[in-house]
Image 1 (cartoon, rainbow, N blue to C red):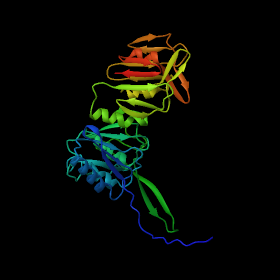
Image 2 (image 1 turned 90 degrees about the vertical axis):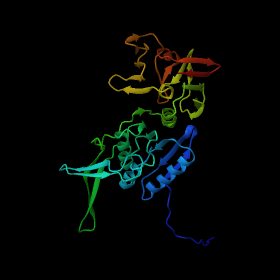
Image 3 (image 1 turned 60 degrees about the vertical axis):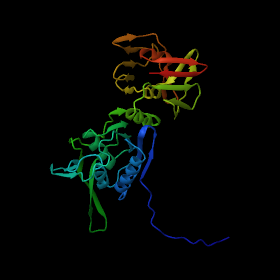
Image 4 (image 1 turned 90 degrees about the horizontal axis):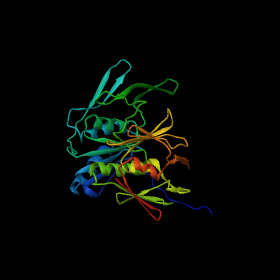
Amino acid sequence: DDFDIELLRSSINLPSVQGQLLDDGIGYITIDIFGSSTADDFGEALTTLKKKGAEKLILDLRNDPGGYLQAAIQIAGDFVEKGRVVVSIVDSNNERQNYYTEGNMLAGGMPVAILVNRASASASEALAGALQDYGVAVLIGDRTFGKGTVQTVIPLQTGGALKLTTAKYHTPNDRVIDHTGLAPDIQILTPELQLEAAKNWLSPPDKTTVILENGGTEAIVNESAVKLWQAPLRQGDTIYLPLRFVFEALGYRVDWQPSDGSIKVTDNRSEAIFYPGEDGRVLSGGQVETGAAPLLHKNEATYAPLSSLSFFNLKVEVDNGRITIEK
């Protein structure tokens, strides 16, 4: 049957900033999009966290598509002294318009890690790029989207409009964002590990421990439970580990090299290159090793044999399907 409902029409303000206090005095703030109230909301969130004891900060800009550039400029002033360039807009005639900080350095002196990914775009890239250029924050995660253009809308007499790209964003160090994006200082492509990497950078642990179980859906990384999409598996007598997850959890950088399909795993002390093929070829310490179990490709992921950890200075224990790796 028909029935009546009384509705109240009203404007809805969805908060774009959320903050919480993590362990070890780490404040964690996410910005979903840059709106008209975002800068004020960020200042309030940061002030609240500092009163609760936050001495370090993780700023999460992952999946932030941008929004009001002015909001990003205002927030930059919470980190950088007044009068410094945040972003420049440069047109095709090389005419430049600079935008400067006007804030009070509310976060001045705090160690800052910024989380970014391929969906961090536009105003979020302008903010992250400025703080990276001034050395007040490190970027952790994946390369950003690369949307660094200014559009101008020209009304037409017919009632339509023409939208033109008229300028590009430049960072304080004159880096062009458009079609390039920002490269992270610490590359971590596994989304579930990016927050852990930021916490470890701000509060370095004495050692890193990763615990996995055959068929498990979670891993324990330094006592934190992390979602695990590819569990360890066994093929005959060989145990295979999800390569990218395990090495990134241990603090290594993992790069797939399209020229030959090899995978390079590095940190500041060691490097190994795993080559595709049945011979299990690995380049480690300048020496080519063969005869190891080859890489395994399954479920759209690459797995490394447990024995491959011997190329690194790692402590490994296996107990009834429970694998503990310590670095």
